[in-house]
Length: 201
Image (cartoon, rainbow, N blue to C red):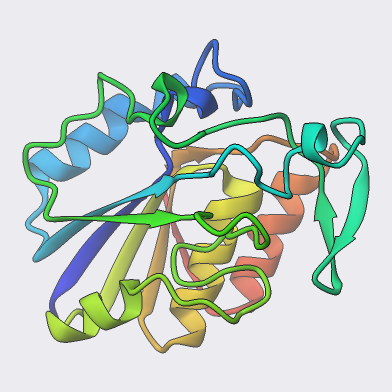
């Protein structure tokens, strides 16, 4: 069974000092590097939030406060601070992440009108990123997932992978939650377990 490692959004804006820093984010980078060193993956994929400056998920573009919710294209959209803007330092991968074995990069959230938590598609499930096609082309059947943040982009990437019939495993030590709500991380883990996703230590 050919397997791939999907590393979700280990970017400067989600790490320590970033515009949308995830608590403990920097702690997962050595773990991810070790996974790549000690395991044989047929493919290693990085995902990258890559937002235009006018992205509708930014509170600043909607005259809203960070943490507010609006309806965007018919679904609730959490309002975030400006982050991972195309071409900025915040959108770059963290310098400590070893990219020597990376085989592919998927950019998401590039359309200003749609947010895209999942590495596979936007939140409205309309626009695909090409990740599924890439994995199927390379005969990948099992995906292991790490990165940021557990309760958003990692969770939705895991759920979509499982729904697309990949054997899906989350490395718990390779992720951290932003915890907009106190129980977000716990609820995310429960939802993933309910969807046949294996949680690894």
